[in-house]
Amino acid sequence: MTIRETRVTRPALHRAKGLAACAFIVVLSSCGGRVAQPIEAVKPLDDVLTCAHFQAEKKNNDFRLTELVGERKESVRDNVGMMVSSPFFLDLKNSEKVEAEALERRNGQLTFLMLSADCDEALGLGQAGGSAPQP
Image: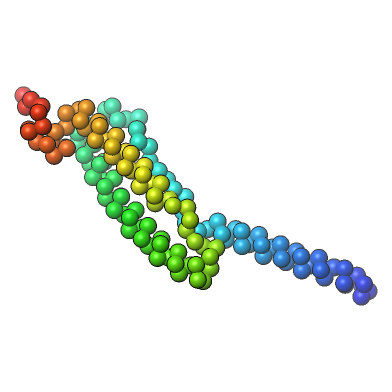
């Protein structure tokens, strides 16, 4: 191998290392955050569910909303730390916001379904809701 051949291949090697480092950084930058998994506002089985089902799902959705708020607070705190050490891991996807909006839409649909099915007790209206007592 001559000196001239070494000079030609060395810049190519440095370029390849630089490209590999850039590719590695791009792959790592996609790691920040998680993919949102929003729920559907209207589900296929809504027509056959009972008032108790609606109430339980709404309660579960409310619990999940509080979890998402906590998750968002942690994400903001983590982003501040990551901004200093490694900006490639910042969570910029807002998956918590997307999921919370989907849960609120579902809760709105559940409220509508409960009103349509005269679920006064599930809505917290008791007998004062205007519907006649069931025989």
